[in-house]
Image (cartoon, rainbow, N blue to C red; front, top):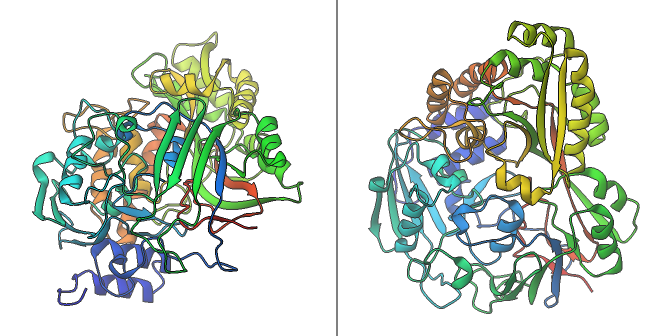
Length: 548
């Protein structure tokens, strides 16, 4: 950061890395976070680490992707990875968290955090245009951020950033610079700005429906969007990033996302026949297709370790889940090794009923709760259900591993006197009611920081009400106080001490069960080159190309 004073916590990070307290990955992430110059976000290429092409990328061709073409209006309201994968080719974010889990600049050129982590300055990239020719400026960022914070929009971004940022805290300090004044310290802004609804929109043309004015700064234009059918994207010739050949990206002429169903057989048949070149598995995660694709010599299966998870979630404002004894009882009915083996072919890691992944830097190791149906039965009797309890469990029928999870849990809960009535429904129907059902199994995607998911899934707004994605309506004052502390704690050892307490609270009186964490995969034709699988299965495909 030439000509600028080094952040005082830089020496703290160097010493922590020297002593082995933090990994190189965490060292780079935290360096970028506070805006230090050496090895930081301010000097790293936007999509770095750059893809190491085995050969010169080939230009031309249209990549055909089997996906789900969801209903879309306001990008800030997106709740599905697949929908964001289509739009992320057209619109872009301030930052990008790469396949290595490190966050770097994208539409932001760099950032600086104040000593107290309450003031953040973002320098914006110059020379970027929207696909209608309008220049990208600070006005677009201010407009978009204020929209996130509008309660009427009901964006999950409000739950993510609204606890520390208000509309009054957003200051335009130049045509290509903004300053954010936070209500409390927060370490995760760069990661938060890559949350999948966080697309930066054109303040001149966006009026609530992106499809009416699909103006983004990304490498493609949206030519056709027919819900449940097809989305057609055409490459721009004036995109701001350049390829290895010195010409503007992308290498492809276009991308087409087409619905071929959500079941394994038609997806695999479309891929094997050449009808599509790859399958977008975001929001899916079932290993069925991966297992089948591994047997096909013309297909490529790429794996990645993630914090994606199927969450057994309970609405704590509804009976019988208001009673923590009932919540504890169902969690004790999880035979975790059996669920992981039969539902997910042992392709993952064991979970312990708190929403913190072993790969997160602040993870605090905890013992795995055993299967204890007798203890569960005693808790139900203590809660007044001496004759047992019958409840509905809502699941998306298209998620085969979720269905298996529910079936195994149903079987293993019976000795406790807990009778689960499985209510399968189409995935689209589940997403319509996922925050409303009393008991369900909800997929949550990977996030690079555990604080991100805890704020999204268990946070409250400034009035103390559950945020939009707090599907369980769980509000625990001690948990929230500790989470606020963690949000502003840079030192990873001190943050881990806080997380030991947070994890214990979720285990002891929380609203979720987590039996396992998932591995994920991309499945494509071997001719699709120039990409690596992302932990969120985000399609970062600016450098993707089709081999001859």
